[in-house]
Image (cartoon, rainbow, N blue to C red; front, side):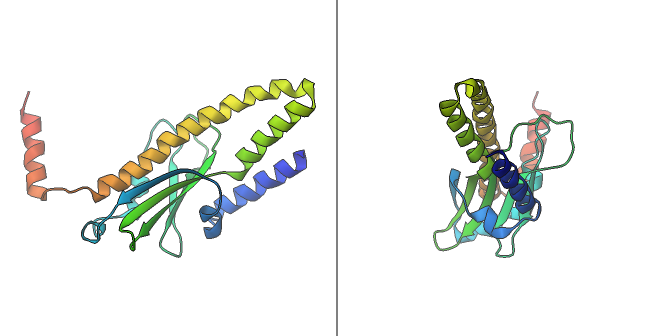
Length: 182
């Protein structure tokens, strides 16, 4: 079982590093958001700017990559950093659906997180001495909650790109007014 976990972890890391398109579209959906995107507003959509729009100084950055079919895949960065870390339990995909006039943001569970959870539960049920391993499950729950917030940030960035905005002159006037008001 341990070798299967290690093999799955290595395979999954390679699939994520290689940005294999089918990998980012197959899996158990953990999170989903459908953002209305009428044709008139889709022209302002800049999915390649999501990495900039979803910056976070607390956690490792999310990395975005366009796939050959026009979708955008995202995952946690693998770079060495001093930012806070958690166990990555999700990868994601942003896709424009022109038929339904929406942008779908989907977060998929990483296979290794699911298999590790199952292995902990099975080991604890079959071997009483393995029960302390159950203390690892809260780590996955906390990681899941953190990733939920990060997923929501991606969906919010898409919403912000599609939001109705006034002309540049009106926006600048509002900013100047806000600065001059004590």
